[in-house]
Image 1 (cartoon, rainbow, N blue to C red):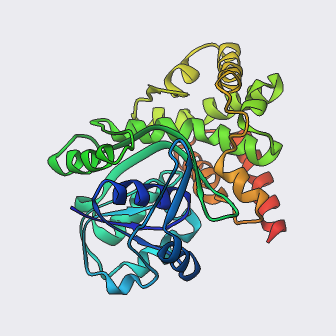
Image 2: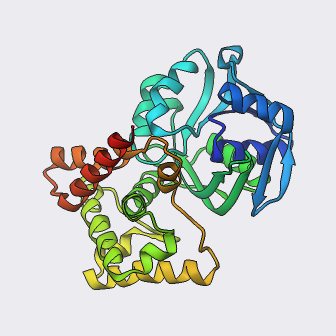
Image 3: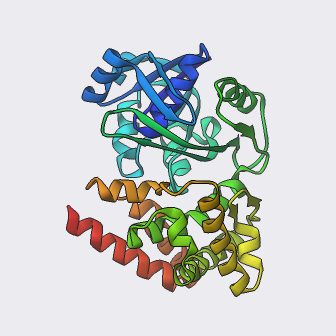
Length: 320
């Protein structure tokens, strides 16, 4: 199976290194400076794994002609330009681990719904100033046919990732998995960007946990309106958070913070905070703008989400 990964940031480099180490036919597409670094030094992973792996990489996607699987790991604001760079590529399956839900529509417009797979992951990594990738969470990487179901091609991709050491799984309810992650991710990303605290610290605080519960329950109205059931999946317990009494939802978030602290995950920061600290662009439109716009279309009120959206948008645009 020939796998092309578009984007050599934290997750792209992480997946590329693991797949290459497992002997898979994988190629990274990276910007010129990153490609040159990988060609010279390979990809170094620290944290949950400690390896340096030579990985095939190119800064010229036009040189690639075909792939069984195209995996996108670029930031959401780079999506359209990234897709343009691989418009010529003949692919059998395409999927994205980006934040948010608009990614599937973008992939389908370019490659067709018949080639687009749903995907969501709870895998965390960070590119360090040295260029190495710190691997901090390997919980799950769910893949499935849209809107539902599992196929031979899904199982083949999952098997390749699993052989490489990534906790991949086939999901017959991928739309539910994607919405489950998105509903809770809204709170993780909003509080991270606005508080600038480590993940465990922000969830432990009673007032910030209150805001997290408010955000999650507001966004949970959207999949309910669309008829998509939420799940309880790891720390993304969206179903419970949307159904229990509000104070119980607040307590649930505080428990997440306490568990992270007990596990020693005191340095974990959500990706949007990593970007903020480095002066990079923020993924506010794909995450918060999307929810606000879809809520308006469906007649669902999201006042807390909209306030956070405008605050983060203001911060991001002022930075630029």
